[in-house]
Image (cartoon, rainbow, N blue to C red; front, side, top):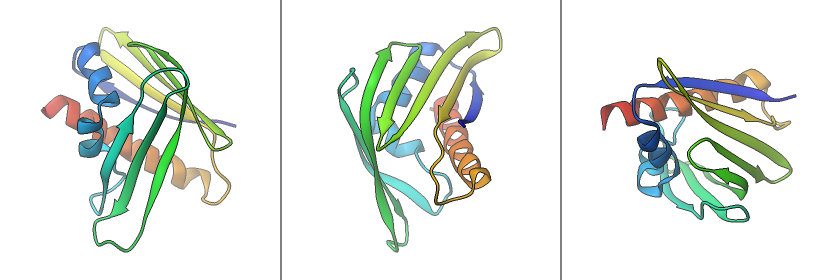
Length: 134
């Protein structure tokens, strides 16, 4: 089973790709709610390269590292990565209405599927806002 979240962004694909893959931008959009933020991010955008984002509650009560390895990178259309035993695929498609970004990922077993989908959708919605307003 995979979970998929999507958004449609009004911006050139080069900008969408850059904002999705650049640490300076990732720390500005990578959060599921206003009480969380990403304090740091690193990206080695190539097959076999590593990535990491430190996500923390703004009140300092908790945090975690989201990290993994890129399996395949085809600029500006595809990123496949592994994080633990799970995998994700990010696709960037040019459409007449804008750039469709979809993320499909293996769910984890701790939290309900609906909660995971809502959290990842909130993050990609923040990404859309960041790209379109900057």
